[in-house]
Length: 362
Image 1 (cartoon, rainbow, N blue to C red):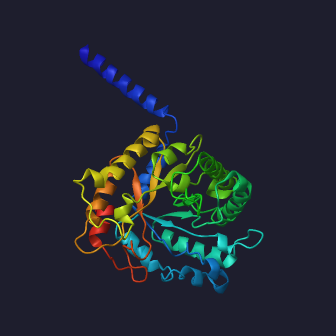
Image 2: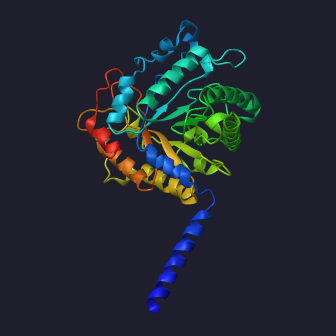
């Protein structure tokens, strides 16, 4: 009689456990399963996200834009190398504002080129994240909110229509690092006003895509906080309420003085609390603010500049990716074709085998 009673208790406990998990607010099983499939990722930075600024009128073709920041035209060789070297996801940053006319219509040649690049990635069995990048016209203030939200939605109406029939391997990311550009607050955690406007813009983005037809009704989407910031105040302010098939996008280059500041630290050690503190804090905050609440998160940008031989970039990358992996968060390396390049844009040659193996967990 004791064994059946014990079995009954175990079954009851398992049932209670599953019931409890099902009741966790924001528990998104499908999103977490998708992120597992997406694995490790890499950005195609400084190609389709190029902006020309004052030179805008001098550029007359998509290729001139695509190569303006000195990267070669995107080709299938790079995507093949990305897949062959253990990556399953490519984030394709795209800037759209300089390709809109006065009515907000995106240049058809630019849209066609973006579609060609997306197709190249998908043909290599990669998941693709398509976003809006370097949209410096966007200013998250109450005064600009209505004007900018209309422009953002106009962009996403056209992107959504172009890719409406693509399957779940294509994800949309509404904004990249929305912030108070050219102000003293630009790279902080924002103001209450700017954070609220960003929440509203996220909502408008999601609603626009969802109402656009085709597979967009259930497409996986990414939203972000102020400046895609990894700081607690910015992440806590992000409104993730009743979303379905929506993932949080965060960027983290920590510690900045080692990863991105060429005049900063040249050394990093996992044995020094001063060096690991910002990464540890980020992981702890991510877990508390999002993961423990069942909210899916993807670090869509991280990375470290090339440095002199014998530095600690590989050790830093191993610590960062493992620390995030421990809490179930995947990361996408920022490859800009230059200071953070891992794979040659033209030839597909591996530029740092050890680092690639570390961040793809090979």
